[in-house]
Image 1 (cartoon, one colour):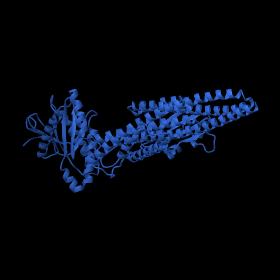
Image 2 (cartoon, rainbow, N blue to C red; image 1 turned 120 degrees about the vertical axis):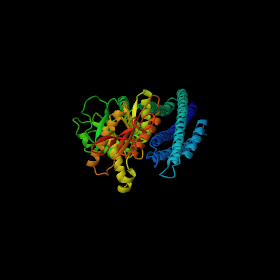
Image 3 (tube, helix red, strand yellow; image 1 turned 90 degrees about the vertical axis):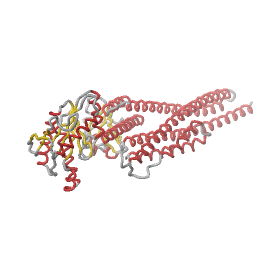
Image 4 (cartoon, helix red, strand yellow; image 1 turned 45 degrees about the horizontal axis):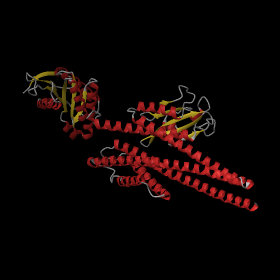
Length: 563
């Protein structure tokens, strides 16, 4: 009997040791797989950030230089590719690559080939088109890479869940076997069973903690996806701020949060989003980006209490003690604001809450940066850089809208007299001053509904909706008077302007009206310049062969016969 008990005890001890070793190996395996999964998640996040930077670069691509966001996008893409290589090396310990991983490896190889920076920092129009095509190709590849990584992560999560279920089932069988064996060797078996029970509880705790972490990751990913969709559906910055408020209310409901962004001068903060009602006791007192520690350093600050010696000076000015977390907001690489979350003293946001704050700040800044870059690109594409007036393409689009509405209009084609002489005598800088002076006079002297454009060189086109030729002549005479006054008060060279006027007819194309006004302008030049000639449907002169002549800048007007 003693021999049997001893044998059973030894068997139980051996089984217990084997189970302990197996639990240790499984724990090590879980830790290693967790680290491998972290590499894959980091690669996905880095590739997503790179794609966002590439999209910003694509919107802000201009002739003559590469976008500021492009170098950062290239670096992030290289980082994501390197993290994928590390993941492959680590994942090789568990077996060969799956079909999805092999497809991702092919996409990563294609992304490596496409992720090549342009050879020059100054590019022409044709090269800009090539860079644009390269950016579009890289963005598409990164989107495919992101989808592949998501599929692999989903597959791995399902595999790990199955493995965890198998481990639990195996653990249950082991415990039953050990309890049965403990009946034959009570004391020794109970001791061994106690050891195994502690091991099992530890493994259960590890598995529960892993399940909780997976649940938190899944919740965070789902929140990030909903936030991204909401921001993409926001067509204006005001709607972006509304989405930010809703996201903050959902992510950190127990905190009073506000988003402060710099104004156009970057000298003052504006509160554009806030949660927590109208209670101002937890509002940040900082007034400008240059005074905010988080905005200055571009890093997250956590202050457990405003009573601490090293707390933010502006936090100490709050009416009531509180804790605070400050997350900087960056747009196109420049810190322009901060997300300020205030709460109860000694209760700053948990790591999950802080991650949510950083996520909202980052996604909102990415969306705002892209919208502002797109707005700048649209403005630059439709505006003349020297005068600030709409360019020819913008004018033609506006006139096309008038035509669709059936609105009649008059066209005044203006040309600065002897502009070449102004450049030759006073220099091209003086010529630029003359163009800007005349552009300002045009803007100030027209109605809000009137259209004006620098058509090319020293030529300007004014479109006057619902205006007859007689009224158009009066408008142009008023413009000439204001120009004379502006030149008298200014320091630029003196010059005059000649105009040709033509009125649109039903179903007449805009370029035909422009041609008539141009012909009238040529006749104004032949009449000695500094005058207005109204074109008829059959020619450039008025029906009686007359033209309105402006003899000087003192607004004296006489009628003379055309030659």
